[in-house]
Image (cartoon, rainbow, N blue to C red):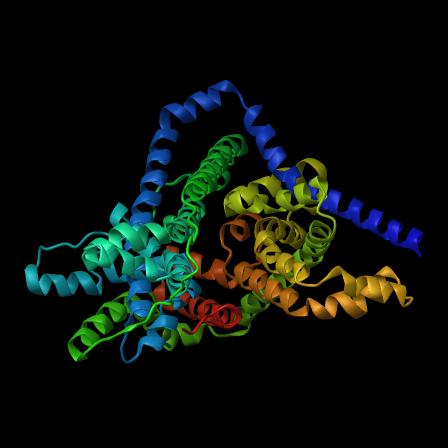
Length: 527
């Protein structure tokens, strides 16, 4: 039995090594293609496009980070430090923008703030017929759209930190004569800094890798430029060079965040712990808090969703709800199901060996799988495209290419659920099952899998929903005539057919809501 167990582990080890190699292979191909490019291509890009693209990408990430920082921290402070009617509703409502893809929010605000749009018409009634508001396709317009969609990352992590905050530190500062405002800026916020920085880092990585919003709003970033090089000029070498720059930029952000977090570690040095108590507010403060929270939720989720519902029931939208539309729904569901299933099957051996046999090799394979974190959609698509064109060209133009790109890009999301689920199960349970005569496969089927079932389900749902919303890889790699809901939103919104894009966009948002509630039900402290 010991020999059989070792044989099974060796087989699993080989499978994990092969998986890690396949995950890193596309990135290796793109890197090789970029480094082998003619120096003239590098010189041309550095002389023409790269400085502008780097400046646009970094400045956009910085502006969005600052805006999400203010929105996320302030809203988290309101719902954790004050008690007022409706607080529990706003506490959950502030998470809803995560169900709204950036490209959906972008096309809604392109309509609202665009030339001759409702907001401009309203502003002209006040300021005169020649008055103009800022364009959604400007730097500040893109910043607003991205910040409204991503501030929940900062809100969630800040809220969690505030709920577990020890108010004894604040009390000591107050007894030393510090004012409430000084206490907040000199004591509370510095102690919350690791959580806030982690949230801002997620926002920055999201902005750097986003394609949907910047493409619809025609704002030039590295991600958008990669797509343009691949589709407009069919120049894979130039696209690979820009891709490497994008990956390096994302890695620099990740390393900076890790360094800053290590420098910002704080430990509670006293055994006295007091949980924060919410302050009861009167009707005037309740009105102000409700107005602030309603404005944020309304701009980020309420108004866009209302418009999508209204457009979806227009005559133009109802006319397209035919067999062709439900074909798009089927394509999205099929691709998402296959990608989620494949990612879970690939991720389980990686998470299992890293948890049960945490050798440097197994941990290295697991970390290799997280390479998808620094691969934006167009980069992942380019990597898979180059891989298949050089090794398996006969598969190009099939659904298999898309599924490989999805697994490469979204596997880290599944591993974040699979790895903790396996770690929570003591190995003694599996050892007892094997001493009772069960083989490795039977132990997995009858013991391990039932115990980690919830983690597997969450991982599958997360990958399914992210695949439903995925846009750039699908645009670049889909078979001819194989459209999904996300593709239809992008195509119709690009031509400003807002009503025609609405049913697909609304369905994507509605499908994303159950995942949010699933995540909230798993880890949502109601203090």
